[in-house]
Amino acid sequence: MDGTGNPWFRGDVAIEDGRISSIGRVKDFKADIKIDATNLVVCPGFIDIHGHSDLSVVVDPRAESKVMQGVTTELGGNCGHSPAPLEGYALEEEKRSAERYGIEVDWRSFGEYLDRIERQGCSINFACLLGHGTVRWCVIGPDDRDPTEEEMERMKELVDKSMREGAFGLSTGLMYAPGCYASTEEIIELAKVVAKHGGIYASHIRRRGEGIRRWGLITPRIDTLVEAVREAIEVGERAGLPIQISHHKAMGRVNWGKVRKTLAMVEEARLRGVDVTCDQYPYTAASSSLASIFPAWARAGGTKKLIERLMDPEQRERIREETVENMEGIGAEYGWQDAYISYLKSEKNSHLIGKSLKEAAELQGKDPFDAAADLLVEEEGSVGIVYFAMCEEDVETVMRNRNVMIGSDGYALSPKGVLGRGRPHPRSYGTYPRVLGVYVREKRVIPWEEAIRKMTSMPAQKLGLFDRGLIRLGIWADVVIFNPRKIKDRSTFEEPHRFPVGIEYVLVNGEIVVDRGTHTGLTPGTVLRH
Image (spheres, rainbow, N blue to C red):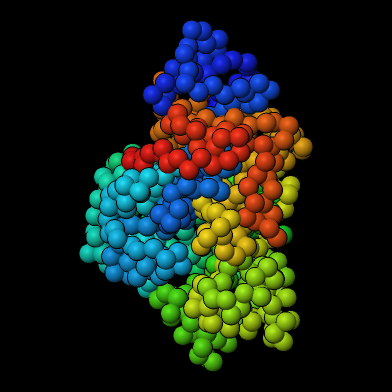
């Protein structure tokens, strides 16, 4: 399966000097290594267009949970957060994140970060977006306000410099602070700078609370999914650059089914000549920080300020009122019983990992809001949650759409060591085998060739990686060989740190990184600069 979506064919593939040198019937080729792929599928390596391995590839360059599921290239820096540039509050936050892994933040600019990965080596190819939230933190800090003219110019300078140093585009996380404080106009102005360099705009779109706040809608129960998608398209259309709508989904029972409308909007935009596409992961659960359940105004000023507000009786009651409405009201995207604790900073509360917020509250004899608020305070803001908010029908509807590719929204993790802590979302280990094993082989939602296209040539085209993503002469030999009868994810919400089955070999730039299901320890990946 060559990545184009064309029907499969039988043939040999020869590789020389890291590139594909022959396809079809390979004659008179003296190979140092031969792989018998009889009855197996040979396809391009999977390109994860939505990853979060920015720090985990620094911790462990083997990128185990990614390459073991067939990922040969990842695009990091998504959802408005990137590991660089680092100034002021952005540097403080990155150091705080790095403490979790026990690593030193010894870079400041975007180029220095990429240099760090390059010196260290990596088992996969790695590219990175520039995070709008990171840029905002550098210049404005965690404040909930618009930038001054001088601050706007400084942000543009940072965007321009980072693009010149290799960023592939700009990402936004409009559900998170500080991205949720930004106006559409602010984002468009920064996106125009990205457009001059030929980059893309990737957006984690606004959710209900942030949408209401920015668009001045009257009722807190109104759906803003359609408006959020419209905003993402507007940014790209007005700034003049390609748009990638990240992990497209409809969260909350009130929104289920509305992906048909949003996907139609994407198609309509494409008919106007706007390059907009989406990505998705094959699960009905999402993952985020516990802080995200609290109102945007309460998160202004950063984690310390949020904790201070939760410890102030008067402000806590105001936060309680809005949070309970968001979690229990008619328009709730998910409830206390749907959100499960996946990560905690300390060992003190480790018995709560895997429990829902409702269960944690019952164990402590508290109401769910107080249990969540107290936990966030005790853990100094470092609490991860997995929440079930989507429906299976929508997952399949989105997957069938030709304008949607696959992205994990996951990290490069490992079953052992610091990267094996907690109960992370299984997408970090199982996204690609799950699509192939469950949605292709078992449910037949899409054909094999279409699934491979969504994982290979489609993201490659979006990123301008025209020397990857296909089985073609002269292209870099990023190759996956899998057993179509066995391939399947094994990572679950209860036991997430489990590698898939059926991925027999993975080659990165012509070198074998996974050999008969075992990581070889090689790090032949390349740092990709736009």
